[in-house]
View (cartoon, one colour):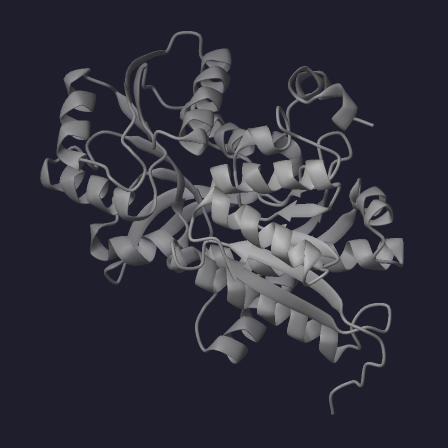
Length: 385
């Protein structure tokens, strides 16, 4: 029997690129739906039912802002959450600052959202570009490669990932040099010309930041030209099932990646999440599923800690908040409001004609954060208190 709720529901406004990037946002939606169903089955929060009102921003910052205004003024939501693309996330963070409304940026990876454009009202769940670059640099520094090339989408996320990777790798390995940078337009890569220009610089290794359809085109072209697996590649996000599912038997072996080997993680937290997810949706979780679920876990933990939905009290509760995720415990750092949820680092391989991760380990996000002094040099002083 379902619980009976007397009071008005707690409303969470969720904005995401559902029509623009369905391969990630559909599993993401299913992840948060599972979390909401579970909390309501246990009696909700503060004796109230939790309700999520979702909106599709179509991958456009203007659309996201229109929804944020409508959800706040008309639907009277208690909390805003979501965002996938970095530029959309930054627009929502700006809205949060101007309107003094709590916003949990679930997916946008840009460092600016917690640093240059950081503000009191914005918290970010996923491991940032800085954190994922630091995880990959740890492996890249062990490689003999001295001449590196980069291929990244020409917008905030790609630029940030490359800047971090270069700075962190050169700090560990002063002997290396970057000999080529390619900046294809996001979603519109010309894989042939990109690889021709890259290989003309004779790199020993490549750092890749492309994802989705661009990644699939790059891999196919690189396989045909025998660039892969001959040239070693370190690649951000490419071990996520959302992308491996598309690559199938074209998955390049040996790439060092961040990702999510969902079928091999045997922790209690993950096993319980994966089993419940499969039971409800009859499919295995993707990384998006984990992010959607963990976003709601963090919001629920904040409401429990604050014991209210008062906006300012929730912000205070979120700083230093400890919460559980399918990857294990995490917390929002008080200094920059970045969560310590980590990622898995390993190598790509194939099993049964499908891409998979091997030799992987969990990189706990708390071990890949910059120093407080570094954060203070990049985050506005008024956002650190």
